[in-house]
Length: 504
Image (cartoon, rainbow, N blue to C red; front, side, top):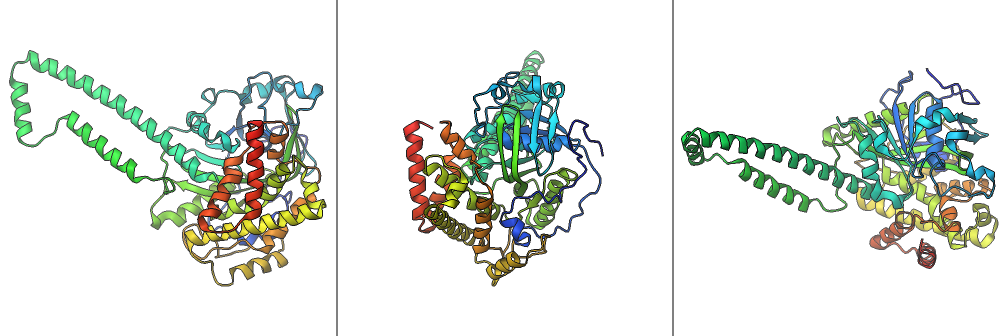
C-alpha cells in the first residue's frame, strides 16, 4: 500500500479501528449492520476522491483518506490562498492562528485517538480549490456541506462526475435531507439532458437545412420522395421532436416529490452520518476530540429492478467499505437509510436543539443540569416515537420481538458485528429504535464535555443555521404522522425565533 510520509503516525490501521464514538450502533452493532455476504477486498486500491466542503468534518475525513494514500482534492468556499473554507465549526480565535494561510502553513489535523496528520504547504497548493471546475473528476465525491447549501450541490459536484456515470457520491450531511438532495440532483440531470437534446436538435436542424438546400438545387425529386414518405406515414423530425416533448412533459407530471427517483449521472448516491466531535482551532488546524465513525446507507443506485436490488445493495455496501480499507476511519452500513438518519437525529435534536434554545451552551451543560437532562430524555423519547411511526408507515410493523432483541444486543454487545435479519432496505422486518438507543446517546452526552455542536457555533457567530432539515422537517413529519412532540415543537419554535431575530 502506498502511503504519504507526512503523517505523524503510521497509517497502517484498518477500518476496524476502535476509535469510535460510543453511539447506539457501537453498543448494538447487530441492530443496523448485518454482516455482508459480499467479499471485502484485502488489497489497497487508490481512488480519486473529491471532498466538497473543507470544514472540520470534511477536512478530517479527507485528510484520513489522503493519509492512507488516496488521491484527494478539497473544495473550499473561501478564496485561496487566504484561508480554508469559513466553516461553522471555526472558533474564530482572535489570535495569530486564525490568520494562518493553508498554502503557507499546511493543514494540521490533531487527534489523540487516531494520530496527527500534517499536509505540508507545497502539497496543499495543489489539493485545495475554490472552483470545482478546476478539479479532477473523481471516483468518490464526499459532500460535507451544511444542509442549507443543498441547492448549490448539483452545480458543485457535476463537474466532478465521470462522464460514464461510475462516480459514487456520499452526502455526509445533517438532517433528513436525502429525498430533497435526490430531487435537486435529478432536476440538474434533466437540465443537462435537455441541453444535450437541444444541441442534438440544432445539429439535426442544420443537417436538414443543408439537405433542403441540396434538394432545391436538385429539382423536384426530393419533394416527390418526401410526399411519398408522408403518404406512407413517415414523420418528419419536427413531428418526432414534438412527440418526444409531450412524452417528457407527461413523465415530469407523474414524478411527484417523495417518489423514488433514479440517477444516471452517478453509480450510487449514499447518505452519510458522521458520529464525530471535531472542531477548528484555527483556519488550518482541525481538532478531533472524540469518535469518528462514518455510517452510510443507499439513497439510490443505478440498479433499480427488484430482482437485482439485494445484490446491488451488497455490492454498493462492499464498495463503501473498501473505500475505507486501510483508512483510520471506522465505518458501518445501514441497509435502511431512513433508520440510520433517525439514529443520528436521536443525537442532533437534543444536543444541537437544546444547546441553541438555551442561547448557545455546551453539551455538558445539558447533561449536568437535572432539568435539561430530563428535557433531553423527553426529546429523545419523542424522536424515537416519530422515527418508529415513520418506519412503520413505510415498511409496516417491525418483526415480532425486534425491540426485545435490540435491548438484548445492547446489554450483551461484545463490540463485534452480529448477523441480523431485522433491518432490510426494501422488505420487512426492520429494527425499531429503543431505550437502548436512547441511553447510548446519553452516554455520548456524558463524554462530550465542553464540546459545542456545529449548530451552536453557527448561532454564536450569527451564521445561517441548519434549521430546515435538522429541526423543522422532523417536526413536520411528526405532525403528518399524528405523533405528539410538544418538547420538540417548543425547541423548534425557539430556534426559529432566534433565526428571525438575528436573520440567520
